[in-house]
Structure formats: C-alpha cells, structure tokens
Image: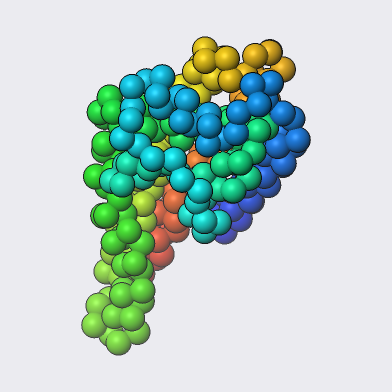
Length: 225
C-alpha cells in the first residue's frame, strides 16, 4: 500500500509538470494586447511599485524563471524574456510579485529565504547515512531516522513555499489588468490558467516530499522492530 502511495504521489508530480508545460505552450501562442515583452512587463511592474534596485535579466535554461532576493534580480528564460504572450507576461508578473513581497518584508518569503541554506544541506545529507550503514558505523534505524529528519526539513521548506508562490500569483493576476498589460477577460483567464497550473507543481512537490518522510519513517520503524 505504501509503495502504491509513493507511485501515486510521483504520478501526480509528473502530471502536474505536464499540465503546466501544456498550459504555457498553449498560452504562449495567445498574444497580450499590450504588446509588451516579459522583460518590459517586469520593468513596468517594478517601476510602478517604486522598485529601482531589481535588475531584469535573461536566464539560462537550467535555472528557469526566478527571483533572486540576494542579488536582487529577476531572471527570465528566453521565451518569457522576449515573448509577448499572455503566458510570458503572466510569468514575468509572478516573479515581480516576489520582488514586491521582498520590498515589503513579506514574512513567508523571508522565512523561505532563511531556510534555503539548511534545505540545500539536508538535500546533500542522504548519502552519508547510507555509507555509514554500509560500513556498520550506525544502525539501519539510526540511518533511516537521519534521512527522515533531512526529508522533513525539505518537506517543511516545500510547505513554506506554497503561500509564497500563491501570493505571488495572486499579485500578478491583480496587477496586470491594473497596469493595462492585459486588457480583456480572455487574457485574464489565460494568465490565471498558466499561473494556476504552475501552482500545482508546488503542491505536487510538497506531496512528494511528504511521501519521502513517510517512506523513511516506515523503513526506520521496520528496522526498530
């Protein structure tokens, strides 16, 4: 049953990824009536909120679209940076939502930023218990409990990410029509569908990390018995 739960969780994650790619592909063909590119959209939104210290740059394909609060930059992939579609302006506005929250010291964003280092450390921790168990330096129970603890930190990080991403999308949906970057109900629907699909990937990531925690706790419980 637990294996079925794991498979179900990863199936949801895969379907969420396919869904967001499908929505972006679909609405990348629907132009925004303003004619602004993603980069121009981001610049316009930032200036409208009095933010002049955040740079908008093209991103490489590995990092994807993101806001870096440490370097104060918004990086947009080429299709979003230069695109004039509803998908492009929606994603650009979403990343601006993070920059606006950073300016306002949004609590969830600050908490998420402070947890990045610990989360990266936890992600690299899994190999050591396996090695120590293989060398008989620790018991399997201890090893799996260490991995469960590391997985829990990642799960909590993914949980904190949810309100951060949902809030950024809500801000994007409100600010685009406010500034006249999208101008019709159909464009609003297009932006909402792209951002709602993207939100599903974060929900799926949280569910997958929760399944990992349960998996390692189950293994630890079996070894304890």
